[in-house]
Length: 265
Image 1 (spheres, rainbow, N blue to C red):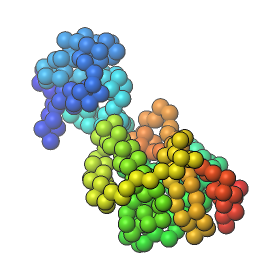
Image 2 (image 1 turned 90 degrees about the vertical axis):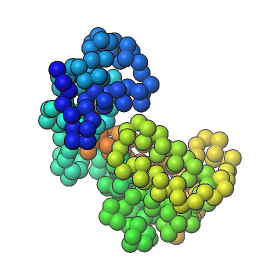
Image 3 (image 1 turned 90 degrees about the horizontal axis):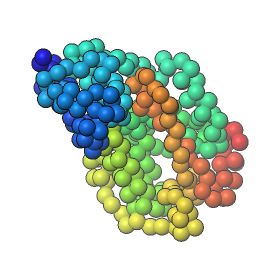
């Protein structure tokens, strides 16, 4: 049985092998975990067998393949995509959950972003800090990493720009390795091209996390961040949403956030 080929020339077997190697897993390891024989998996990878939609999902579960990429597997195997992709506004209770988390984080700045860090939603505190961006960076879409590291964006306000930039680039590289998301490689290349100031540190904060320390119209702030994602998503958009919340890294920042106009302490 010949495996169906996508318009790009990729077969489902080629995609399985690529993601297996990306995850540094052996055929035997994946076949045992996905409950199929190593011979069958080998046949899939070489194009001698075409997996069923159920088999594709089992293999992708074991390889932690993002839902957007899973749809490519199904198309390459000759099947229709199984994971829908709806805008945030059409996600019903999931959209309500995003709004509830953002509102609940006030007065701490919090944003919802997609896999390429384009802004999907923000609470009032975050909008306060993003309000002064030039039009070409403000979007839409507003890209959070571009807005932070671009010389015309917030970069001139970041005290530890070298340290923060190095951390951001490492994070994007890891995300690209994990997701292979379209557009992320171009964004990484753009960010790398902004220049590399010397890293600076502040031991009082940096022994815990890499902080974001910057000057704002309201005073100097220091943030640490936490990321929130949805568990067991079945929609592509939901699979790619992350909520980034910036918490105060010192007492002065906590007091400043509580005093911001228009935010709910």
